[in-house]
Image 1: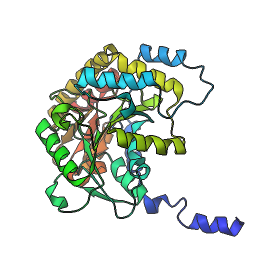
Image 2 (image 1 turned 135 degrees about the vertical axis):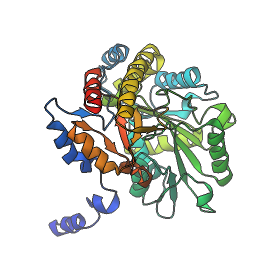
Image 3 (image 1 turned 90 degrees about the horizontal axis):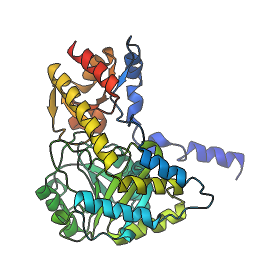
Image 4 (image 1 turned 90 degrees about the vertical axis):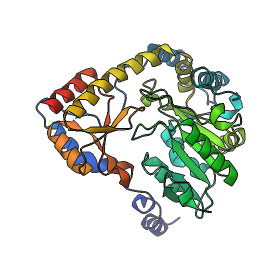
Amino acid sequence: MTASDVGRVRRGHVGNVSGRLPDFPWDKLTAYAVRARAHPDGIVDLSVGTPVDPTPEVVRRALEAASDSPGYPQTVGRVETRQAAVDWLARRHGVTGLDVDAVLPVIGTKELVATLPTQLGLGPGDTVVYPELAYPTYAVGAALAGATGVATDSLTSLGPRRVAILWLNSPSNPTGRVLPQIHLKKVVDWCRERGTLLVSDECYLDCAWEAEPLSVLHPDVSGGSHEGLLAVHSLSKRSNLAGYRCGFVAGDPAVVAELLAVRKNLGLIQPGPQQAAMGAALTDDDHVEQQHARYAARREVLKAALEGAGFRIDHSEASLYLWATRDQDCWETVADLAELGVLVAPGAFYGARGRQHVRVAFTATDERVAAATRRLVG
């Protein structure tokens, strides 16, 4: 390839992210973050929702024990880790009939969400459906594959359209809404009638406060069969493992096998030490209950402070966020709170229906949560 060939490629599609993908939403928050950092007592960052508490000791010990890892790990993952995922889903969430061959470790679930349509061979002419208020990466995954993304909560609005993938997210990011069993079953039936792959993002399944979320793989939802169903799980939130990039996908064995074949070719492999750490995290329930109690306390404090400051909290029965509104444009709310040194995420990041809400994470330390509370009620 000559220098002119390289230049022609560079001027074309390669590197033209702005032409293929939506703008990265968090870049729009930079100026507000600068304003919040100017507060005399520093910023209280409630925007991203990144864990701040220590990684559990049981996980760190497992990582250390597996740190001598000179060889390539297997893409399929350690049997012990996949069995731990099977056992956890059964023990904590009532999922039955799942085999280790229907579980696949991934390198953080955002990677999977963003590339799933591509890994499954979707492209122009295919349709990917996701909720009207949703994690932006569902739309990114559709765009990256060249497929058509449709944001809707109404199955009837799709008409006879052929849908390749339908995403669910319960508990929801950003709203914290939990879909009831009857709704989940209705969506499962709809997808099976049409040959649509249903993928359920269940990363907040262990972060419930006022509802009992169900996995799409639960027999009351799936009817005892996992055909046409995938569930995506992350350990970032429940186990403070965002830095470890540990997650897995489970469900229809045929679809998992297809993903495995593709990921072998791409070299998408969760590192061996992380696989051991993930197995330890899934086996231990004590640290999850301790972290759940921390978040519950922070949630109550922030919820009371926001309501005292004139906000209404909608949904928010699960996840790690409060979906708050003062019935004003979300960017006005972001600006007002930034003046107090509190940074939150504008609801517009997650869809047009979020333009009067902000998403408030309660993953900050107790000290920062207390600081936010003083500023909100002061």
